[in-house]
Image (tube, rainbow, N blue to C red; front, side, top):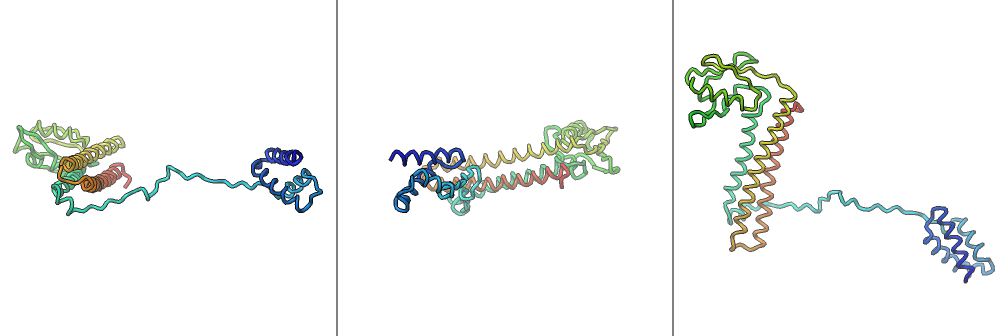
Length: 272
């Protein structure tokens, strides 16, 4: 028995030296020794094991196992939520919430058109807001807008000369990089050259407006979810179902607003 143990030990040490699995070799060798007792009882154990190892009878074949990548995203974990508008409308003011979310996205589009333009245009200036004598106006209410040439726009303030200071202030704060100059009742607006810095500033402005829109949509989401949770007449499971659907609707409008922002940023940076 001692001789057999020693013989197996020799092969295990040899396996370690040659980079093979010692446990695998030991088990295989013991199995082969059992076969030796039947095939060739007179052959010594050490000689028999040396032969079978050299003949690769118990050579270890390694198998590499790869662990699953935990960071890899799986679509199986993503639950798609279907929105049941009839169910939602039955239990709270769903249509009003949806309309407000749509208005938030529409307001983002209008803000981009009015306030984020690479070049000042008569169209962009038309709807530029002006606060005058406590009331809110747009420039086209107070001035006649004339495009003198491709590089200059003139505001004729002859009808409301008292509004000139308010209009000048609005132009300078417009974010369009304007430097208006007054000449009596006229305001001359040189159209600025589009620089890389100006493009980047406009792009940042686009993101800021998107974040404001996103916050508005999420506030509507949270407000209506709270109303549902405060309603003691509704079952808990029903509240959870409607909460998921409200969140899914809000996410839909946020994604739409994000798409509009990315398109605007691409336009402003000259990528499109």
